[in-house]
Length: 309
Image (cartoon, rainbow, N blue to C red; front, side, top):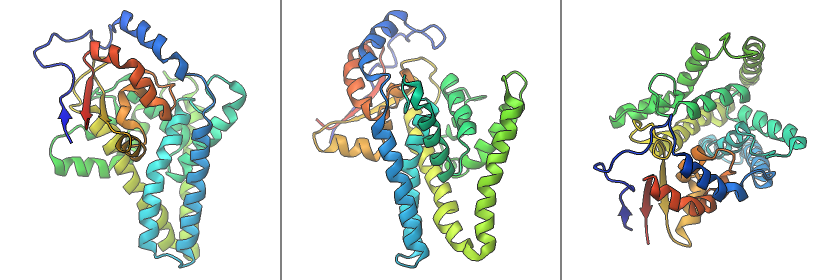
């Protein structure tokens, strides 16, 4: 397997800065990507249903002793890793698309998938949109917590991302007067978190603490660490670029068999640049959008890493 270096050498003049995007490139890119915008994302809905069903099934089998708790923990960690995708899509309104009559379904998927991952949907949405507004900003990008080089520190930061997100929310978002309606929203978010943790605590008090720990709490931390590593750490390396077409990476694995396998293992975030450029493109359409946009991306010297032939 061969690997091509990212498009654009260090000696090439830099592209337009993030706050002064290349308007011509943007207009061209928007024209190319329009066919992939606005539809109701039924594949995401079916994925969410499958994730909820799989989590319930594994939890039931492990609780009944059909499978050992440690195996249930592994399965649920992988399921919650996938669960972030419909939650993430809901945050951008991608499930309803342009059809407002399906907004209820968009939010339902967000709340349910968020609850499985022990994230409050609206709190997660605010933090994720902050990441989009200020990508790679060391002061206010919530995902910049993992922008370190030492591999042991990377492991530590990924493992503690849940605590960092909570700290970030209460420091930068909760009760801030400059955010309209934030006071009642913060109360709503706090109440939702109280419900989630009360359910976990109540089940533990009733004698199910091993199951809660092994099938929900530990998978929550493992999945969160995997998500931040693959979807934020790798995709934004070296975490220092602020240009619109170059602050995020693409890892393009070629081959009729390998490409779809890697795409699904990575939940299509190996095309993370497409998501940052056009967040309203459904995740499963990233590869098609990427192929359409590649001439523009090459022109803007996007960081595209190619693997295979």
